[in-house]
Image (cartoon, rainbow, N blue to C red; front, side):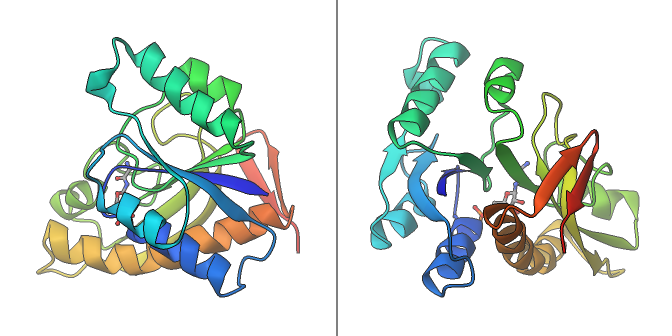
Length: 201
Ligand code: GAR
């Protein structure tokens, strides 16, 4: 199974995926390409260190969102990718792109969806005063963080948490959740029925 991982930043979730494949926790998947909208993203260095092909597609170097997504799509097709993994990719993909890759895009979000979608999920949780938050791995649909949920991990929110301390606690769980979801996908254990993702035993 060939994966593409789309990133914008530090790439710790990408690293968790690389480590799970290298350690043999995920056996039947490989990362065919890492694509970043930021040419200086540290995630690209992580990929290069692991001998994974990298592609940078800058939004501002493209005349339109269509051109930006067409370049990403071309890179995905050139590598024969079967699944697109959004691992800290900080751009909203168009409905056209999402529909073309229907049920073939997975995202990780740093909150317990449907609470706190969009930007700064951790800050939204702290500001709201919830006692628990966490992360969600889900299939991507045309909405923002609204697709069928594969799995979630929960963490407590402490009285003295800041956005950063909560983000650190959630990130530890993200690094468990994303490889777990990819392993289930790669083993063919996920089926989507409407809004629900069923996990085969
Ligand atoms: C992660 O916390 C991820 O959940 C979040 O960006 C961070 C990327 O970290 N993604 C979003 O907020 C998407 N809406 P990483 O680059 O170290 O994996």
